Image (cartoon, rainbow, N blue to C red; front, side):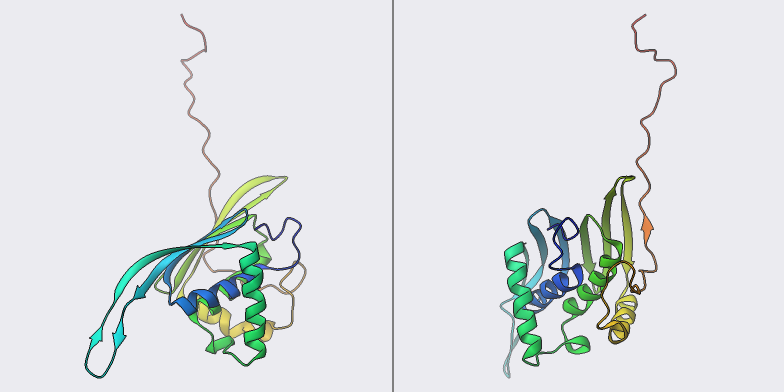
Length: 198
């Protein structure tokens, strides 16, 4: 899904918010999300078969699930999310953890305008890798969002509401540890090799 290659109908903030709401509904944790040309692939842990009752508590079985979200699926999720919010479903601080976290990280990503996105989550903290491509070449940017970073961005949400997250508008604060990945090293040279056999 190439949001910034001729597809102005959506942005990372809303796309990730919708995916996050779906993941929260499934109870998925420790997620990995990879952008592919026609959507996103998400992998995460889900607990199945657990129950709690007056007479017993069972933990259930933890399994790893892999989900593929195509562009059409995401458009449907976004429509459903708008309908849920219109019906008074929880939003903001009352929304699920992935919905809140992915939304605020998505807003930050919209400011960066990446070519594609990869992220993973471990116990509520996220590591994000953005690929930037342009006339000057391509590079990756890495950023880490701790639980505190996410909470800080969520708490700033009401002050940013109604303002577009596009270039030229006030930006969401960048992740504190965003650093560009180093360029690839040049291949080693051997000054004794002249290219001809002696």
